[in-house]
Length: 219
Image (cartoon, rainbow, N blue to C red; front, top):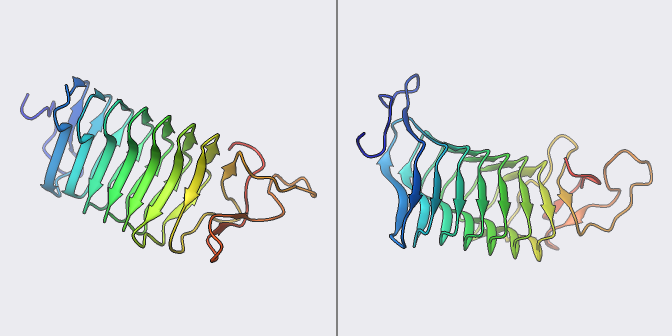
């Protein structure tokens, strides 16, 4: 096994596979670090804890998938720096400093992850055009934090539950899609027509960033 890769050749049809690892980073900087590649790869079924910088770090990377993995007790669970066209799915990310942190990374996906008990669950810095869909974001200090002009991100069908602060943004993002927004446990609007959608928007910030179709029930 070289560099943790157990199979694959790095092509779209035969991606490198990194799987089955249980890593206690012991306060080393990273559990898994991938830097400057466009080769196709999948990281799956790994458990990483104790990383001083990030459990999994992708920098200047395209075409990666991280799935079915558990990251706990790291400074950052998963970090993407200057990376695009990557997918994070079905991961459990808990009790880290930041759960997922994107820095100037665009056109990535975070799908159906459970992100809980972190300081900040999902932090997008200067990162545009990313999709956050179907995630459970619960019991964090901050749910979704979009800063440094992060805009044009699509965020819907997520459940924001019992976070101290659910969301913060500084630019315009899309918090709903095709009439479906997100579930917010601190939403106090009503659903007079009982269609499962709140009758008033959930306001992220006063300058127009809002969920126009907040869900009354957890999706």
